[in-house]
Structure formats: structure tokens, C-alpha cells
Length: 155
Image (cartoon, rainbow, N blue to C red; front, side):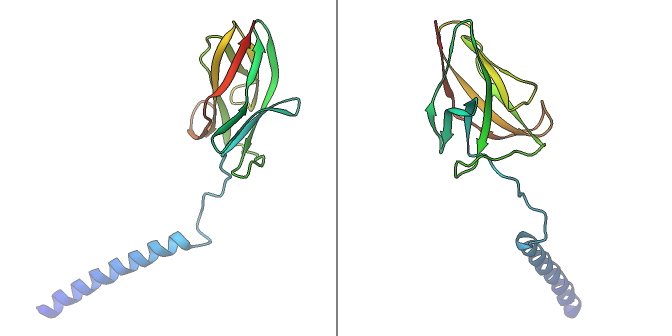
């Protein structure tokens, strides 16, 4: 009787040990699927190739400005890696621009596009937050969210 219980326990222990070894091997297996896409750590907003705003390591340099009743664009958003180098998000990504439309709006060139036009409504200040979203346009999860970027609308 004791031998049968010992064998059952031994089999259970061997199964647990095998599962633990397989789980550990999967974590270090160079052939296992991995998350190899680049991750955005910052961005640049450019007009005609000239950076107007840079967000790097959580710090915003520059601001966006437009006169009331006018527009500036197209503005191109370039996402950057942790070195500040441009990255090219693959086809599974899209951009969302978030801005309270009180004194200005950021009108994207098309849904999910990495470019748009800044339109001034009335003099004042607001902010623009930009997200890099993974998934189909209108759906998905946010992989990167900028800190609020200052926007000034002049008279």
C-alpha cells in the first residue's frame, strides 16, 4: 500500500517538476514567440520637416501655436524610441489625438493618420495629448500616451 502511494506521489512530483522545467524553458527559449515590435518612448511634431515639439524622456520642448481663425498643417507626428531616434510603427498601429476643442482642434488627415492640421478657434491655451494605439482604427489598446503638449492660440 505504501509503495502505491509513493509511486502516485512520485508521479505527481515528476509531473510538477516537468511542468516547471517546461515553463522555465519557454521563458528563455529563443525560438518562442516574442514581443519584438519597437516601443515608442517619445515623439516629434514636425511642420515641413522642422520639429516644432519634441517629447523625450517625459519632457516637452517647444509648443504648438496657431492664430484664431487660421490653421497650421499638415503637422506630422514621428514617434521615437528611447534614444530619440525615429521609429516606424507597423501597420497594426494608429494615432489618436486628444484635445478639448475649446480654443483649437487637431484634425487628423484621416482616421488614425500620423498627421493632421491644427485649427485655431479663439485666443487662449489648451493641450494636445497623442496616443499610439495598437489594433484596428477605432479599437485596440494604447501602447504610448504623451504628456500634455501645450497649444497656444493667438488673436
